Amino acid sequence: MKDEDDEDEDDAGMQYMIQQSLLDASQRKQVRTNPVTTHSSSGADSIPVFTAIRQGREKLVEDLSVNHKEVFRQTDPRGWTALHEASVQSNQTILELTYAASGDDAVDQQTMRGETPLFLAVERGFVDNADFLLGHGARPDTQNQDQDSPLHIAVRSGCMDLARRLLRGGASVLYESCASGDVSSLTLLLEYGADANVAKQSGHLPIHRAAHRGHLHTAQAGHLQVLELLLRKGADVLSQAQDEASVLYESCASGDVSSLTLLLEYGADANVAKQSGHLPIHRAAHRGHLQALMLLIPVTSMEDIYNSGMSPLHSAAAGGHAHCIKALLDAGFDPNYMLHPCVRRSYDDERKSALFFAVSNNDVPSARLLLEAGAMTNQDPVKCLQVALRLGNYELIKTLLRYGANVNFYSRVNTTHFPSALQYALNDEVVVRMLCNYGYQVERCFDCPYGSRSHVPEDYEGWSNTVIKDTMFCEVITVSWLKHLSGHLVRILLDYVDHVTLCSKLKAAVMEQQQWGDICRLQENARCLQHLCRLRIRICLGRLRLRSPVFMSFLPLPPPLKDYILYREYDLHGQLDNKHT
Image 1 (cartoon, rainbow, N blue to C red):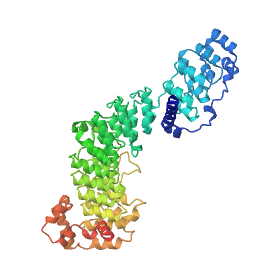
Image 2: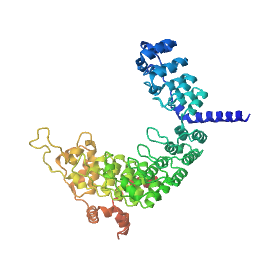
Image 3: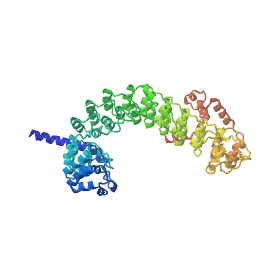
Image 4: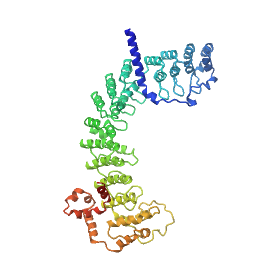
């Protein structure tokens, strides 16, 4: 009675374990109806041995195995051999004759769809055939092109007896059990002798899978028990996959502190990098796992971080995790550590700084944290301000300008005679005035070598064999699709300069606009002394002092005068903020 109870419990445990371990496979599997991938025997009739096997003609099969052994190695259009065909027939004698004539290596030969004779026998439910093939060395773990194994097929078809035989014949679903966090399945598999360090083709061990998939089972805490069980059974905590990802690196995907603590207690090394150079601390920062990051900071070598060519700040900024950025800055990480040239080359824009990642993500809180910690704004080939202008984020633009972004940068492409920032704001008065308030060189927009003369050279033939590298403002703003903006833009720019001369091309375009009357009034009359004094004071103070709130607060001038010097009456973004508040 006791033996029967034990057998029933083993069967129930076995069935539960198999069903749980194949959860991923059942979700991934879809029924295929393409006639090319079915088991149709069309085309096999032309091979005599296939016909003899299907018709159960034992004598003919035996004669062929003696006199024409080579036919047993032939394949039909499906990639089937004679042994594949024999494995799906109910005649055991023919299977034995075919195996003897085919050779030992034929037992694991795969079809066009990756199916072995054992796979087909299990798929058709031929238990005796499966037993025979297992007894003659068939590998029970070989997967087809759909990543299904004979065990998957046996369970899916409800043939638990076959599944049990496959397990006892060596089939292992250890990797899948680790993925699902099924402790009971894993325990049973290990008791059957499953190797805790068996690797997949990718080099991943079961412990990699358990560590990586932990975040799916945090509520059950099953993944932690799986990790602990594998480690107790000798799983290699220092193992690395083909891409050199460590177990600790995989565990950082979930950010579970308990798993990380357990791995570190068993000797996991936080300073082992992937082929890409990323350390576990980089992954934790990129995923935004603050507690995991705090656990890794003290056990990660700064030398190894520098050798990786990137800072965790880059990873946290790329992931958009301001809380991780703050933790790293509080721990002493340098906000101005730049990507190594080898890493930089993997980006088309050749970015360097963590600030660039934050700005590219339109992430104002992260950018502000980095800037407050001393991040420099002008270190990247493509300027952070240029990216912010493209995004059109007023708050981000103003923050960068306030912390020293060069408003007068020149782009490496589409080079112009005037600073490039204005190109991104031709139709946005808020940004135009923001740029001018922070010291944009407006005079360059009115600097034209042609003056009142014609802008077409005398020797111009309608084309040029050189690249124009110094495009004038008048040439940009007078193109057909921007000409309607010329009047409004010129009127704004005149608020930031003394008397200027409009070149003939710019004047012709502006004369057609409704702002021409106002522009004429400013150009024909002397500018007021108050305005000229403001311009002179701004020149004396310089752009860097003007954008510094601390310096301006100590300047011994009345607040209204300070506001006038800073063009507060034209601070449209500040006025919008005041309205909202």
